[in-house]
Each structure stands twice: as C-alpha cells, then as structure tokens.
Amino acid sequence: MALPTHIRLEFVTPERAIAHDEVDELQLPGEEGAFGVLPGHAPLLAALRTGEMWYRKGGDVHYAFIDGGFAEVLPDRVSIMAQVAERAEDIDLQRAEAAKLRAENRLSRPTAADADAERTRIAMLRAIARLSVAQRSRQRHHH
Ligand code: ATP
Image 1 (spheres, rainbow, N blue to C red):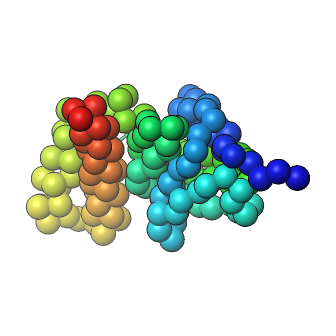
Image 2: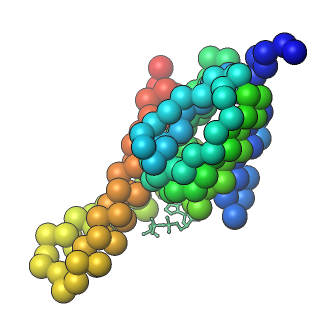
Image 3: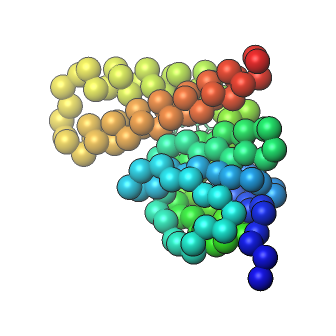
C-alpha cells in the first residue's frame, strides 16, 4: 500500500468547523508539549492543552488558537475536537488584550481564594495564546 502524501484535516469545535483541508503537515499543542504530524504518522490519540496550532498547505501556513480538546492522528487523517478554537484571522485582538489586562489586574490584587487565582491564571494563558496566534498570522501577511 502506498504511503499517504497528504493529511486530511478535520478541525471542529462544538460550535463550528475551523478547518476541513488537505494539508502537508501540522503542529498541535499536546498536553506533554507541541508535536508535529507528517503524512504516514503512527495512529495516536492526544489530549490538547491551551495553545497554538498551525498547519501547512504548500507554501501557506495557517495558525489557530486551541483551548483544550482531543486529536485523533491516523496516517492520512487528523481529527481535532477542540473545546474552543479560533482561526488566527478570526481572533478579536482588542478582546484578547482586554482579557489579558483584566487578568493582570486581578492577579495584582490579593485574592480571597486560590481557585480564583488559578482561574485568572488560566484566563491569562488563553489571552496570551490568542495574542500570539493573531500576531503570527499578521507577521506572515506583512512579508
Ligand atoms: P473573554 O474573557 O474575552 O470572554 P474567554 O477566554 O473567557 O475570553 P472563552 O470562554 O475562551 O473566552 O470563549 C468564549 C467564546 O468566545 C468562544 O466562542 C470563543 O471562540 C470566543 N472568543 C473568546 N475570545 C475571543 C477573541 N479574542 N477573539 C475571537 N473569539 C473569541
């Protein structure tokens, strides 16, 4: 049997489809670190953390934000089921900046409960990851 030359990417959240495409390679934010996938990858199921992913189709690289979920990797197909995700071009920069500022302000004050601080820290991680994803796609478009 011939080795696959491409990967069919199916990337969804419960709310919407993020990407359905034939891609050359991709990278995902695994719980244990970022990992790359090329055609012919061994089958695996991975839990995803909050962070950024990208996929390459020819010379085009597309970036997206992922807020946890799962990925099923097969030799010729990758299915991503994210809790929340946005394509780089759909990220509202002002909203992410505002979320980051809110989190910074909260963390700078003494807080009643550790659980609140943990929630705020996670909100901060989401905002930072969104800003990073949005920035990467802008850098590319300015080349
Ligand atoms: P905020 O505090 O601004 O609501 P959040 O991190 O709490 O941010 P989420 O709970 O992760 O927001 O997401 C709620 C919904 O809003 C999801 O549909 C998500 O895709 C969308 N969303 C959140 N932040 C942004 C953003 N900066 N740009 C585009 N969509 C966003």
